[in-house]
Image (tube, rainbow over the protein chains, first blue to last red):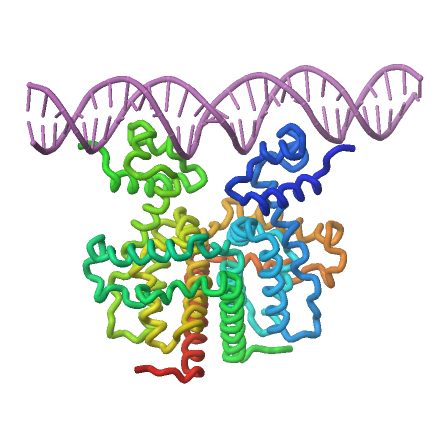
Length: 229
Length: 229
DNA sequence: CTACTTAATAGAACACCGTTCAATTAATCA
DNA sequence: TGATTAATTGAACGGTGTTCTATTAAGTAG
């Protein structure tokens, strides 16, 4: 009876979702579970890192659901990364954890890795070019997907003013060799990043990057003239 | 007399370079400086985050040196991101800090942002397409560049064995619907990621991603048929 | 049902951490 | 010189991750 690992991991996810990763603590988790901190260590391993790994695994578990094998390799890759983006979107505060997971040697979801590798192998990549293609997808897309998007500041106008001040003071500051006065930033084009809210622009940019990378891989797989078998 | 901000920030960089970001602490930094912790707060601001921002700013300060305006916008983008990758490469342990910086609303180096925006504007992007192109570069490349590359494990054979075990046990574990037995991973193709050491494969993959993204942007800027002025 | 073994939990303790604050020394300027 | 400001100290507050020993609950064999 009593607590089990699943409950602990779910509680951790809920806590991170609500209060953010920075505010997470083992002791606080134990507190909300009404239990001694030692219980968490007993169930989940001797390191906070172990708990985080479980969290990553749970969230990325559904990554390869709904992948249909009869799709082209391009569409399968599209599906799997869109789904990735969707899952992260449901737990945005956990995103940095998934990013860290991805960048380290430990990959939570081996089936997902296999799915990506299989698509690339079908495209004709092999050996070092397979490694590069894999790294391009992981590095480019996962990096983007696991970004914790900062929402537009509450006081958008005030922030914009602060930003404008920073730009105005930049010459005197430390960049004497700047040609002009940063005209593009000054014209507030940069603020477009938050136009219509972060999510809209994020989705649109994500689709653009997805297209660019998959197009690029398609081109390169054909240039190699590799067996499609 | 005494300490100044520059010394503190440099000491912080040195400490992170040597012991890693996880091991960094304000108190330890004060200890190696032979000084009370409060001194750091007095010089650098009330938050650890402020110190990290300074660190990011110092490391990315040289980002736009050696950019020659007569280059094509593509080559300028190539230069600026290769330089970014080079700077991060010199302080790999600081990389997560730069990544976090990039993903938040605060961007350390405004001149760098302006340089990227200027190149994209010259390419013909404007309005929302400029925003997307900017996000594609930032999200795709910076995400890749600021990855803290995990080096090959010390005991590569042992790690490989552990990995193979994980793969072998995966069906019984939790993925009953897996078609085969993860043949690609099993064939150790995945381990290619570390073949010849992380750096070599990393550079090669980085160049591939850089080419793919800049080619993709070139294509899209032409398709729009925008004014080149 | 009882003895024994194993699974879970509690609580205190250790060694840190970031940050603040009043008091104090060092430097500067009138 | 004296007064003001710049730097620095040391102690303190309220946390943190993790470990350890002791204790209770659950399950199992006789």
